[in-house]
Length: 362
Image 1 (cartoon, rainbow, N blue to C red):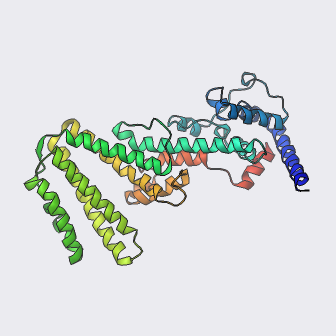
Image 2: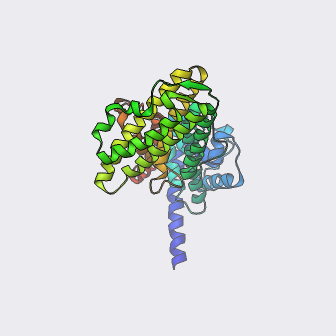
Image 3: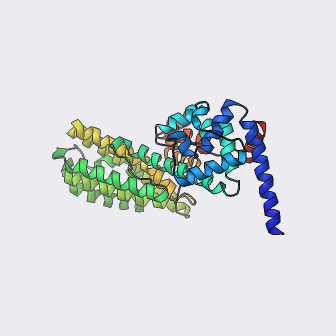
C-alpha cells in the first residue's frame, strides 16, 4: 500500500509539473528556462555541456515536461537577469533561477520531483558554495589574493585569516627603521579614564609590553609586526568577553574593545604615514581586508553557518560588524554589503506559495 501510495503521489507530482511545463513552454521566456534545465542545469547556461549527473537531471526534467526539447540552439537566447549577470562577475554561475522569478519557481519545483530532485538540490548547493568562495574573494581583494578552490563556512574564515596574516607579515617584515612619534600608552590619553581601576590596570600592562617593542615610537618592521600581532590578540580576547553571559564582563569588554581597536587603527595610520610609499598603500589594504575578515569570523561563530553560509546570514553578519558605519550601512554601502544584497536577491528561494503560484501562472 505504501509503495502504491508513493507511486500515485509521484504520478500526481509529475503530472502537475508536466502541466506547468507545457504552460511554461508556451512563451520564449519559459522555453529558455526549460532549456536551461533540459540542457543540464548549470551547464546549460554556462558551458553548454555538463557532467553526467547534470545531464541526467536535465534529461529527466525534459522528460517530465514531455515537450520533446531539442538542442539549445533551436530556442531563444536565455534572458539572464541583470542581478545574475553582476554575480557572474564574482564567479557565481548561472542556473535556471538566473532567468528571474519564473526560472526560480521552476528550479524550486524540480527539487521536489522524485529521481531528479537530488540533482537540482545539488545545483543549489554548488551555487551556494560558489557564493561562499566569492565572499572570501571579496574579503581578500584588497590584498590581491583569491581562493583557487571552493571554500565555505568555517573553512572560508580559516583560509582568509591565513592569507591576511601572511599579508601583514610580508608588508611589515619588509619595512626598515621608522618612528611613529608616540607610544601606545601616550595614544591612550584620556581613554582610560572611563574604565574601572581593574580594567585600566590590565590595559596599561598590555600597552607596556607594546611600548617595549617601540620605545619612544622608534621601531622597525620586525618589531612593529609583533606589536600588531599583540594588538590583534588583545582585540580577540576582548571580542570573546563581549559575548560573555555576565553583564558586567560584557560591558567592560565592549569599552576595552572600542579603545584598543581605535588605538590599533591610529598606530597603523602613523606607521603608514611614517614609512609612506607602497608600504602605506599595502598596509591600509591589509587592514581593510582584516576589517572585512571580522564578517567571516562572525559567520563562523553562527550556528548553522559553520559548513556553509547563506546570503541572509552574510547580510546579518555585515549588520553586526559594520553597524557603527551608520549612514553607509543604511545606504547599503558598508563593505561587501552590495555584493551580499545582490546574492540575497538571486540565491534566496521564493516563498512556497509564491513559487507555486508563479509556476501555475506561467
